Image (cartoon, rainbow, N blue to C red):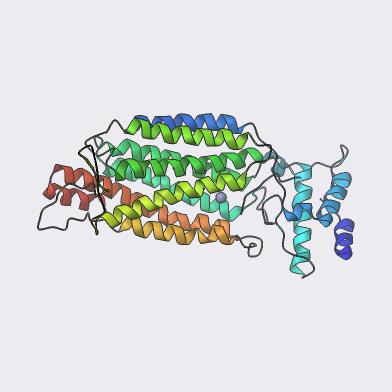
Length: 386
Ligand SMILES: [Zn+2]
């Protein structure tokens, strides 16, 4: 251990990368949009980042302190301009090099692999901290932009689900934009913008699942229930953000736990929806009002299947998404300090996002056609699924 300390202390050293990553009727959606802006404003009140084992390590401390004293004095030469343009400070730069020095020790078998300020040591590309996660985030951004284009090209303007799908696309484009920024340069503000945007995406996809599966919004009708349900989701998300920002240290475990619960409710709803098309699920009668499980499609031609053309897709997508989430759970040290589990998770969601959009447009069109009549349902549904 002491030899490692010496090597770290004696080597010529070129800040705190203050980051942390543990280890997710049209009017209703306006409330979520407002919540988004409120959150972006709240996020500017950044809070300090928590520590990891690497940045608590004595060798790292010694290395970082020596670097700061020798390299970050007022008379010291400035770090390169391309780093400063991306917000790197001299101390950030010291921490970057010290993290790699300690990781070199791990490669040599003299040390454990550590995370630093919530992240493994990655080789940066120019000023970009996690190049592969940036590429994967841009890939996701592109997929959701394509989703927006698909909605506009294939879903009729007077289909009530269209503005919901468009808003969902904008929310996800926003999320992947901030994910790109966060993985390019991790600061308390970019981190929170990434985390909070992701939470808004999870809440919005859950809200869409609720209004779509339970027929609260259909291509032709909008139930008044859309307002209290959308309002409740928007208020919950806003309350969650205010709550987590009230801590002096960001409560990552709580934040991620809430995201997982919302994501699981979304997944279970879609699984039940697929199941409802194969099995007669229980119904409840309250005051002579029959409350049935999903199956929102109207009666179809008796010669055709009662199931919509895409009945199995949500269950398959939920299964694949759960499988891809294994990367997030594993969170292993990156291969060659470049490819980590988080980047693989982001790459995995690219084809899944594409498939979700293909499904949601086809579903909105098939439901639209189904409400027009059995024959038009088939024609419209086939067209939309290109
Ligand atoms: Zn990410």
